[in-house]
Image (cartoon, one colour):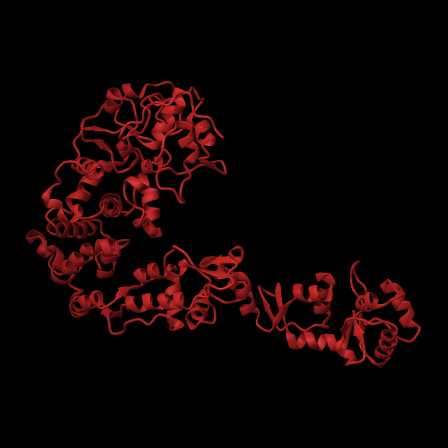
Length: 599
């Protein structure tokens, strides 16, 4: 058991977990905090575990024993932003992990460091760029060597070059976004009433929304709708773009409509043909097709139906009209069909999330008639595929009711994903696998905590029996005959055993029970007779004796370990009957009817 560290400084209320580990490391005179991370078991495959938005549940028992503290999991950023439920969606998880946190660096307010040198938990979020208490930029680069601030450094307030971060140059600036962000994170102060739509979002949903909206804003300046979180705060101008992103949601939806007008005219000035209906829709609604952001979709649909031809702002009607003179027919079909589309069904992306499968699998499930789309909905003259969510949930409930919980071997259990991969080996794709699951031919053996189909576990042996049916593998035949697998493979190659099915370009072969029975009726491995013989104990001696009565092996021995095959004819049957009369054995060979039993 690890002994507790000698020096265990007090943990501040708003101190980050990584910052606290760094401060403990420095207090105990470790070379750097990496040593303490390793000692605490927070390193895997030469990489430090993500303490902000971890992929799996963290085990903090060792570090708790080292510092004699409990409930450290509450200091993990994932818990603090309340994102456990939201992060069940892999798309949201990736965006938050990739863009919302400072996973590979740290930042701080130099004045806060002067007042009390500890690293605050809010500083772990990359969208926090300005300290609202001191109205100054956060520091994310050393002012002396311009290197990123290493979260695993030796000393909390000093760079590896020796520079004291508290002496950093201070640049004052105000940021409405950072002020709002601070209030939301610490749940303190009164929130602005003109931001009602964002006030109602959970903090994690708000965080995700700002990442996406910043891409819109970034696209108006850089002609690309990407995030520049990898750049330093000063270089990226991120605080300025975040202020604009937050303003879009003030007085909802007025500022939002004005932003769309600005975005479309900006593209016109840059001579970029991105003003069509589909491209505008893709730009705005991409990655926002989740229930919590439905208000954005509704407002955007209203804009398309009412202001797409003329624009929302009075001063730009003529310019917008010129841009959209070719879209009148499209607008008419949109007015007829668009609202119907989003009130009568669920999008394919949401259905993919309900089922826990990739979007690329939806078309395959439709072809197998596992999913039945709602027909008659059109957008811009093209069919817009929607689904009945209740029907999909009912399907999942039926699969759960059909589950077989008897004689479950947990060691042989496969997750849905692994089972689907296992079935691919037998040329059964995911859609076929789900179809068998829905029909009841394949039954789950355990119910877990995953999403959709990922909740179900399956018994590997039963799945293999279903996939194999009346077929045998080469390995199973070699086990039955007690010969090497290479020998059976050579018999297959020479045509003694006919392959019924082959997968993976012939690398995996199956033999039907009928073909195996035909082989057993016409051929017998010489070694099988040797095992039953009382006096002959080698294949060579048996072949010498058989050559005397005119029986020769049907194949040649090419490699060491190859097994000779003897063709079953009248001479061999008479020899075996004579042999059997002198010894009682346990199993009959099918070629000899009821006369001879071979061990």
